[in-house]
Image (tube, rainbow, N blue to C red; front, side, top):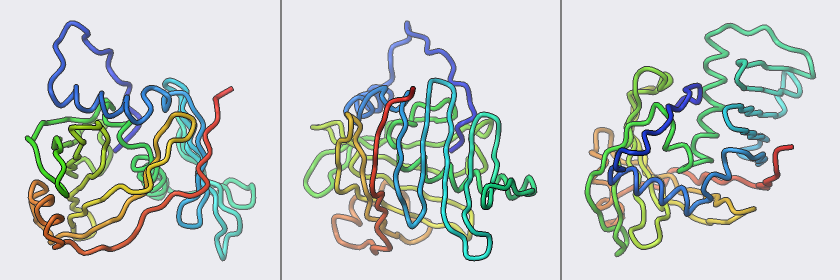
Length: 241
């Protein structure tokens, strides 16, 4: 998903769709509007990330040690993308700026679910109910408008929201890049920090081409293969000055 879309003002007179009501309830449950004006730092896979959002302004940073280049510091914000090595700005091509921006964006996208499901480029569709591990869920499919949806706009996502608690407990996606595939993620270790909920995930693989609505049954039957765990460490939340 891409963050560079101004979100159109909502038409408040229009009745909310079922999918919009469910997503709004989940966002409220996970911390409401807190993510719109906040600083968050965390560590993920040996890299340090900083998230800052203040209304329409945003800055996402990533820093890590590179064997050959030294200390790398990536910054993605409203102005664009820059990469520094040992405090010197590196000249990089637009193609690599795009790739690095996407990889930073991707980590932020997953870390701040379900908050960004109201982005302007998101198309939501209610797909009925499902039972996962004996509990009832609303299924919502998410696709992205081509315009403003970033280069992964062909990806399809499915989210499962608890009917009882409004929490986002599972999500899945199918993607086309790198030969494509299907992933199913089970949230675990939920923790509330300064009123915002953060989740880790168990990342499962399904056979390529598996319809996302089949995943609850495959998961219930232990037919999915656990690939990895996605864990954010040292999460800290602070106010924007």
